[in-house]
Length: 369
Image (cartoon, rainbow, N blue to C red; front, side, top):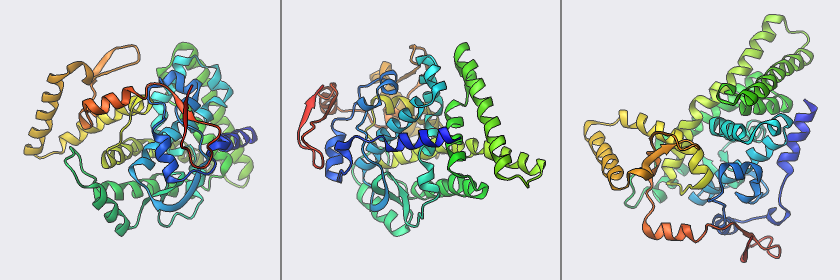
């Protein structure tokens, strides 16, 4: 347990000194050099290629903007990769299995990777994004946010209910259950590792063996730790707490994908590369789920859009595995189809670029690697 805490601290403190103090304007510049073309395999092995390791700041200084939440997701990936790479058992896994764990568990891990900063802080006005911005919980701030972004000729509009559901999810599925169990930082670190190694049945034989042993070790470690932490609890009380602890993975995971979809939907994110790949599966599922709840007229428009889009360029709307196996349609492509001008802009950024050493607080100059 002490190792996990020290490992977690190393992950949180792993910051590029050039990006300790960035402003919103700096972040907008950094958004231009995110490694959107980096593959999942490369991203896990070299997280710094995806996004600079900016210093996290869990404060509520200003309501978030589109650029904040977009940058947030790439930065979260880097944190998750740094965290995973510090675990010896994760490093023992074949690279394909490492990628598979990220495909299956990134959604739930991304919500919990720095939960200790969220659960035990005084969140009175919103959910901090880690860079000074926050998703508002106050009704007036939510409505002000929606007025700004609920304009223009876009396929999807920001939803007030989605913003309110976001607040409900964080409180009901994360903060309250964790507080009710009185989990300390050691137990939270253990939970994060469990969330990373779940769904072992989808790994290779070697990966399954490593993950199975790791999970057994984690479960036993939690039992032993809580037994020493609460020596006066009866066996039944310990068993109930142990079971409620393990149920946290389903509490966080059950809604996390839907909430991520709603936020992406509400802010019209320009995701590509790793984030587009990791999110496409649940965007596809959530899109179908949303379609089933539409009125007859809305459903007609939705599927007309689907048919028209796929007929124009059917190959680009196929959802595939990393091995090229076709598993269905990727409806996330329909949500935000790139225009030709946007595509040309994107092609110009197909080389990884990072800030020059000479620019720390206000980046202006970039150099190619």
